[in-house]
Length: 324
Length: 248
Ligand SMILES: Cc1cc2nc3c(=O)[nH]c(=O)nc-3n(C[C@H](O)[C@H](O)[C@H](O)COP(=O)(O)OP(=O)(O)OC[C@H]3O[C@@H](n4cnc5c(N)ncnc54)[C@H](O)[C@@H]3O)c2cc1C
Ligand SMILES: Cc1cc2nc3c(=O)[nH]c(=O)nc-3n(C[C@H](O)[C@H](O)[C@H](O)COP(=O)(O)OP(=O)(O)OC[C@H]3O[C@@H](n4cnc5c(N)ncnc54)[C@H](O)[C@@H]3O)c2cc1C
Image (tube, rainbow over all chains, first blue to last red; front, side):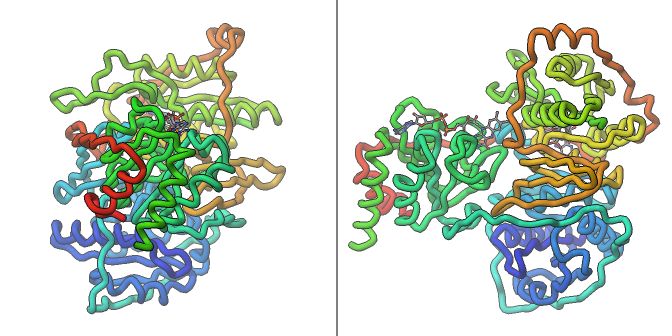
């Protein structure tokens, strides 16, 4: 009783920061409940990756193996995790609300007939959690009843778990999957070309909005600043909808939620749906030519200026600072 | 092809949301109610598929009597008929998905298209739960759907790029923002919608266990972020970020 199974999402054996956030939340929940946090690494040959996550403070790592877990597919993964949850008698299943976590966990909850709270940001007690709703305008406290409870945690709600010296034991288990019942087929993954830090990992994010006016301007005006700062690049929905930048750069209620140390919003008005994705950043800075733009209401530092003049100047200033 | 589209009624995304002082809900005076934007995208996609291949588009809502307004709008967009499963009780996601699974069992659609998320409760759960309950494939966050003679292919918006998966129908698909641009209801569409079938079913009559396993205890406004100050120049901005905020 009281154990927390943390789904440790990996990308070909590498654990992104978002996974370490789930581990951290899992450790905290297990402590509150007096149980153990157990990491689960799924794959066709997950042992290597499992060894990697063993140093992050969990009590045990389960390497859940099956040929059908080679590529992520919701039906096979939900079957494997549900069977494991029942076998271990865990009380909580937890993952970060990444694209994969969001896709998998509701299916898993339904398979277990267990209640699920999405994107929690705080653990009130062992069955009560806080989650943002209405684009972050309403914090709802929800109570879950039942022997198994399913949770996703927001990727910005906890710091990444830190590695220690102790290594948790790794236990290999063959996943229980009824392969005849599987109906989904992985075809391909088309990665967005990106040599910059991931949005969900970056210390600094520079985001552009409709004010940039074109994809070309993202390249020639914004990207030099992004790269000078070693930042990740983000965008508003309007910029993505207009085709200026790829879809997965969208920050906001219906895109990615980020909370870097520094978020610089350039030519973004600050609609509530955009704020929902970045208002927990440590320092927010906005460049906008309209001094009434709502983004200034959340910005620590605001500069009212034409971005086409200010952004190249800023790239120069940052460069000077680096060389001083 | 028969397509079922579950539809949720939500506050217009442009509405400023205020929490009631007692934390029991949101203030609903001055709220304009609309079809959840992702459900509009789902209706549009269903209509486009139907227009290519013939078939029927059936809308379904689990909600109160006034949800008829949004169903009527969906009918005016071009859907063929609507079902309102009536309830005043607060339901959790499992219960709503369970009701939709029951309706799917009766209607036997080839495809169910939902929004990826409702922009009020932001749960992002119902489609995935429904797929599991029916034992069907799921394709969430769809940005392109191709229905082939044998297989359906869906391009999904995932972290770091686009993923393509394939399966045979029946299946559950949830819509992302850039799947299509929904049409507006035309005047003739609105006229026609008045005569289209709107069936009401009492949720209690379905013989399902709807007791919530998840309860909303309270709702509260988040802490407000303080506005900072304006700086006069790029030089000052870079200087304060360096010396005061110490982030660069
Ligand atoms: C269902 C739904 C979901 C949504 N989800 C999201 C989401 O996840 N993320 C998101 O971002 N939005 C989302 N939106 C959209 C959101 O409501 C806004 O429409 C969007 O954020 C606006 O983008 P923007 O600020 O780039 O554009 P605009 O609002 O058009 O703002 C452009 C800004 O650029 C400034 N500007 C123009 N030229 C210059 C210049 N030369 N120099 C300096 N400043 C300049 C203008 O003053 C203006 O403030 C969603 C909307 C809906 C309905
Ligand atoms: C503030 C608040 C928070 C809540 N949080 C949770 C929670 O974390 N877990 C939980 O189990 N319950 C929760 N509930 C209970 C509530 O009933 C939710 O509506 C339910 O969980 C579904 O979440 P959602 O509306 O965000 O739908 P999502 O899963 O985000 O919706 C996806 C799609 O499902 C379809 N859909 C959703 N609702 C309906 C409906 N009623 N009729 C027809 N189609 C529909 C639509 O196509 C929609 O686009 C919450 C309620 C409130 C008021």
